[in-house]
Figure: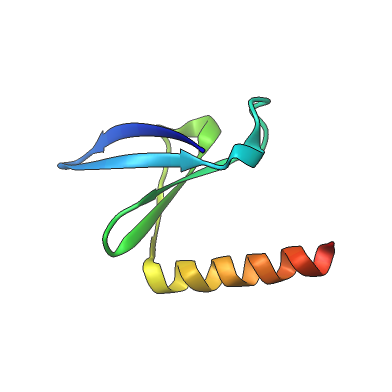
Amino acid sequence: MSTEQVATGSAQLTWFKSSYSGSGGGNCVEIALAPTTVHIRDSKTAPGPVLHVSNGPWRTFLSFAETEAHVAD
């Protein structure tokens, strides 16, 4: 995983991008974890909009994505 630290308001966020993303600049998202939320952004437009999701729904999404990934295999 690659990381990048940026200041957002008064909080410091560390952004992570999956190592599966590679360096080709394709369709990648980055996430930053905070105590009660997950911040999600498009890696190609880092200064752009950021989606904020509570931890519970984020865990539900990850479980769903993992299940669907195994179905696709």
